[in-house]
Image (cartoon, rainbow, N blue to C red; front, side):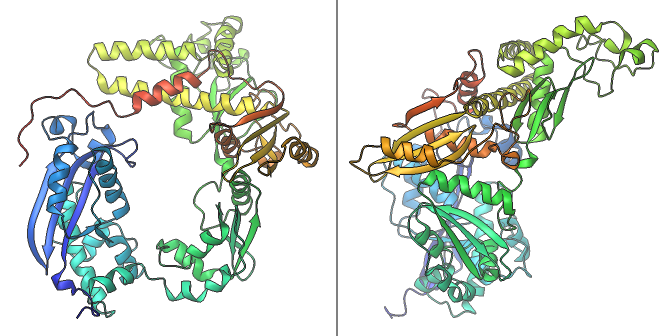
Length: 581
């Protein structure tokens, strides 16, 4: 019987589900725990409680779950709930749908409050569903989809206990399916859920010649088309993992089935690997990569070059325009930033091409913004081109680096709305300010780096010695290492001498930011990789040709303040609680 293992009918499962204020234990907290204990298809008990996260619940979480800050005000804190849950789950197999999320939060809570995490066996119903269900049966493995497919009596609704009950029914249905594969014991079930597919086993030879060390790998099909590009600090270990049961993503397993070759590009440092990955993804646009495929989709906030300039959201830089702010990740962010700038500077917001002959003929379209005091109405001749120049200069100064007028106007409006108890409008105004400050801070950081003809930096290598990077106009031109114990200067000189030549492919008036890798400059994501690498403690600036600074009244310090404002609040002082039931 010991060789057979523990029969599934004798295994006690605790199915758990959490609701949280966000997606990461590092900056979010648990708001609700739901758990159901079952054995042999029979429910043995339930545990469910709201949890006070120690701060307000974000509006989008309230919209998703229905849990409000008022609901959790009198709820117990996680340090009181955790011991009860650990006792409830003692000696059982922990089950969750997307277990990494729920178990990650529970482990973080245990570590924070001094509880040892028990040696639970963990089963993920997502992994199990991917093994026993085909794409022709269900389009995805979301809990809602599986509950609907198996006709569960309880439908998930983003409340912890309801979702846990639905997961119990999905678990039982999946166990029935697993039985048709000959799975009858807990040990077989755990191995079965993580077992590689036949295609993964058959393609393992593709990883035989992969070297170790940092680099980039490319999966290619029989025609040489690039299917997927990835990076790793250890190429051999990472590529091998694609052919094991630890790789459960359906799209990746599908990609492995198509792949006929794995090409690798060894790199000197992890930074070089990260940058090469970005460039290769942008160049090949592999169908199985999801991020960084379309850097050209970034948008810019532009001050147009016309008699009465206005703000416009555009996708490309052109020489001769007055000013740009960007690149910005999405059109929505750009529109939020534009709205914040309009609060401070009364530029016209109409999109018509406004010329003096059009105004003189009285043919220009008018709007209500003048009546609201948001525009000087140049379309009606109430503002001359000369007086309008003051608004243009103010907007250009803000976009060049002095964000104080936008911040002052937004804060004044927020204070007024809050005093009138119009909190939702005040929050919307705060979000506009945040979008502007983050966009401006990003533009200023990238612009400062892109304006330097050459920057050479070094930082300690993981195994001793130094990692060295040569950056020209924001683009990584060379990367290498100096071994432990050797003087780094000869290695620095050799890298500078052999580094890629990068011309300043800049758009006039673009704030010093290159148009992108396609025109010989650096993409925004590449420059952010370089800045993250330099920001690590211990990094040294070796040489600099240029001025690497951010504006005195720029957005960087304000961005940090806004990030703190959006972060979860510190725990409130102790207050009377209801007893835990």
